[in-house]
Every structure is written in C-alpha cells, then in structure tokens.
Length: 251
Ligand SMILES: [Zn+2]
Image (cartoon, rainbow, N blue to C red; front, top):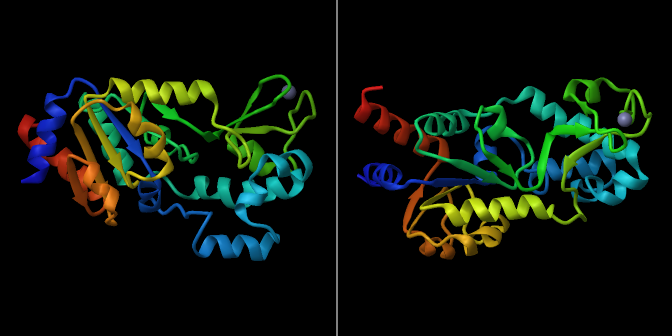
C-alpha cells in the first residue's frame, strides 16, 4: 500500500516540509484568477485582466480599480470560503509532529487560517494588510467595509496588502526562508503543484534528500523526478495518511 510507504517516510523523517500549490487551493473552492472562467469574468467586468489590475502599476496609479477587484473578488472569496479538509489534515499532521513546515506561493492564507504554524508565504498573504506609513495592521473586515480605497485611520494613506503584486520581485528574506526550510528537509511533499511549476522550479534545487513525494491530479513528464507519485486529490491523500497514522497510534 502506497500510503503505508509514505507514512513510513514521514515516520523516518526528522524534518518534513510540505509545498502547497494551486491544486490544494482549487480543492477548497478557490478559483484560479489567472485562467479559466474567472479570468474572463474579471476582464468583462473590469476591462482589464487580473494580472494587469493586481499589479504594482495599478496599485500605484489606479487604486480605485485595484481595490475594487481586491475587495469584491479576492477578499470576498476569503470571507465566504473556509480552508478545505486538505488544510485541516495538514494542521493535524503538524500537531502529530509529522510535518515541520509549510511553504507556499499562494496568497490566500489558507494554511494559516487552518491553524498551520511555521508557514512560509513566499508571496505574502492577503490576510495581512498594513498602512505603509505607520505600519498599523488592518482587518479584512475593515477593508471590505471601506468605501472605495481603504485608508489608514491615522495617516489617511492607502492600506497596502502585504503581498507580492504582479510586476514585483519576491521578497528576498522570504525567498531565503523558503530555501532554508527546503534545504533542511529530509522528506519533501509537494501537494497540488507539478514539479515544473514556479513553486518547485524555485525550491527543488535546495532539496538534497531522497524522499520527494508528489501528489497531483494531472500527469506531467517532470513527475518522474519524484521518488513517490500519488495521482489524485490532495485532500483524499491527506485524509488517508491521517487515518492511517491515527489507526497506527490509536488516536
Ligand atoms: Zn498609518
């Protein structure tokens, strides 16, 4: 049984890092705004693509439209859509000491919302919104309730989502942290991303172990780099691992 083997990998590994990709997010019901149906809807409604609007250029010069998309599409999804069962399983595996850290390029903050700790959000998270002038943090509720561009109450300057916008480089400190986590890993589990995705292309070079596990629902030639491949949904896989672990340890 494959899950037995993978659980054994987790049992033997002293430091296990998980990389979560778009597949995990899709399973939670989060749309991919860059392609598919959602991208057409955005272009139709706003007259520009998601990538154009959610960019440093639009944040600098066209804040009204930037925040319209940010509030109506992105933050609304966060408010209406909780992290799915896959993230709950990640949190359990962390609690059981089977996973030590989670690294992602996704900005929806699903890992943190599920209660995971030691999460490296390489491109930041839309859960974090800060006044660039005084550093005060603002809640999602504050931003969605604001009319037009949300301003800092004290400074009256526009609040800034703490994310890497299109047109910006990934923060160096976050990139370094992610690379450090991966280089420490004895086992590395990639969930819902192919090995040629930007997430893996940026990080796999730092992995020196021999237990690279890939869970994905679509085949790709790069899959063969993995030591173990599981085709299917990530949440199903994680549930099986959690169940297997719980039955072994009588939890
Ligand atoms: Zn301020």
